[in-house]
Length: 288
Image 1: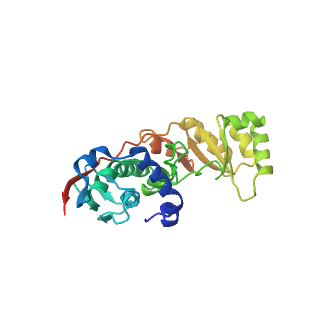
Image 2: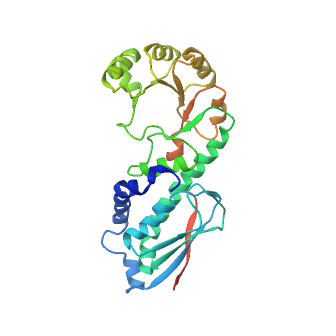
Image 3: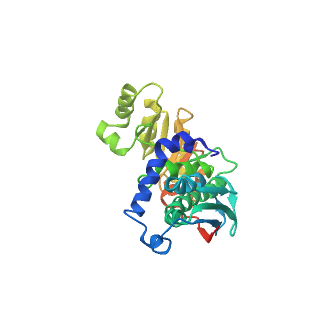
């Protein structure tokens, strides 16, 4: 793949297990429909056709579904992850036992449609930030057991990944601050606990908290659910002492105004929880 998150090592260690789980969910004992009409092995091929303009993502995951069902299955790809695709475009052909093509179809398409939808939505959002210094980030608001695929899709769409999981970075949110007692105390405790290589990010909900976080030495200050004018004041208060991140109900529709605030990053859960799928279909199954 053209991005590192789903290279062959990652696929073997992590993705294969998740794909197998998805296949087991769909085929608990047998594919009754397929076995009824195709009782014996027969070679065939089917076309993968795009039914909507967008950014394709997940081609190797799509192929892996069929290869896990039958290592002899072959996928001839005409596009790669990150490519723009158009309605009616032939993107690949899958060749193998017709029973495998039929049984793997839904799971393979579920991955490809979901990942392509996220890549497409991300790409459209990134375009709105062109010309500014603001970088688009995803969040941990991902579908359970789909995070590795969904965060990869954000990268394919031109966005960047925030921390992958809770072990990946320190982000002190309102409840962490409540547990510690104050913004200052939370930052101090994080600095004392964390290795020096870890950056400390803290969520703020008011200009008073912004000043406290900057004075305490936070590396990144998240401006949560603030309007543009308040964010501008926050950026002035921070005055380059920390990086700034805007968060809270960020969508394609309102992201343009956020640029005016001068924040370094904008994180959007919508990239992974609200992106519609890209319509993709497998058609023209035939014996060969």
